[in-house]
Length: 236
Image (tube, helix red, strand yellow):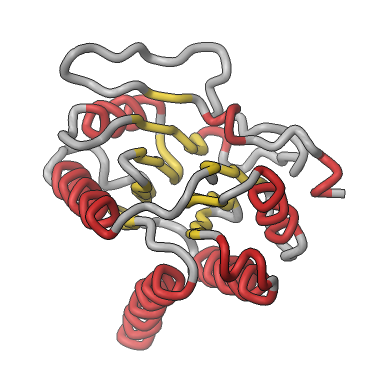
């Protein structure tokens, strides 16, 4: 039974990586890496389903499929949209499309209104993500956390479930990484992980009261409130 469970987890891990690869090839190309992952099997499968369905629905819309560059990242039923859209209308349409997928608790719309990033920029994003993941793996005290790193056009998004102490360590690693222009936290805290949350309310982990300032050797840390749509009609 133990061997069977290990096999199932290994297959899920491979499937998860494939899902992200397909997502990048089909719609977007954000640089994504899972550092540690303590989600349940059911939670992993749920996030995989959300990723696939959001991407499928984006592909079904000709404007979104042909005119935008969108990556979808789901972690704990929290969805991050990264990439570029040429107009505010398409940016909003992408979010509205994502909300039609069942099981999403929160969407952070980080799509920028501009043309697609270059291949060089995407390669740089992958290198930034790799450096951050390597440093996190070498840092003591993070193994109990669940961490996903997403880099898009020099902006690093940190997702997962962490403690307050772990959050500080993770943010420090990201903001001291060369090439990172900005760091955005999208964390859920372990002590609040079981608390009920309304889809229309900001995550409790979103620090809307204080953002850390940048120095000459670090990069600014942005709260997640700016990524939340004010149009609740998209989730009604």
